Image: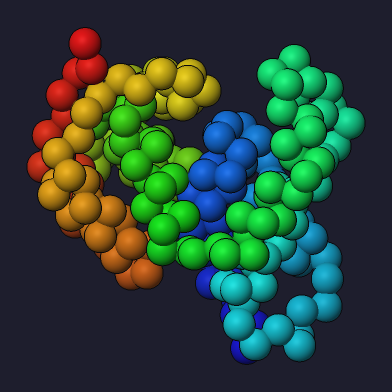
Length: 203
């Protein structure tokens, strides 16, 4: 059954993570997810019984359309990737789409690029949608500092290189806490789990 607007937008953390894992760029991922919600609220979705699966399908289709757009193809030509995309690699990957693995992969991709402060601010602001005042109180940081940290985080996410190595067991625990936060909204416990991650700078 269809839920309230708040219920539907509560899927944003999962959708952003999936789009980021597919597109590899946070700005593109955010645009696709935002467009997905716009289309959702414009459509008659009264027939949809499983909203999360429907939204995930919409996000995947949005990523496909984005990657096949003229602008994206022009970018891909420089990297000699256009033929690979034409051969249906996206469709093949999505045929075997595994939500659990996709989320874990996306989460890991974020973790190796951001330090604790960057990851915490980014996840709370961009994935869970908290305002800067809430983040400031939760992390005990000044509001303006949180804004600057988010800017740095976004720049690092757009870079190709990995900055950190993460202990596998602690990464797994952090991911489990992230999933729980997505389902329950208990963000304080998630932030605490982030603090337990052991991040080692890549030399």
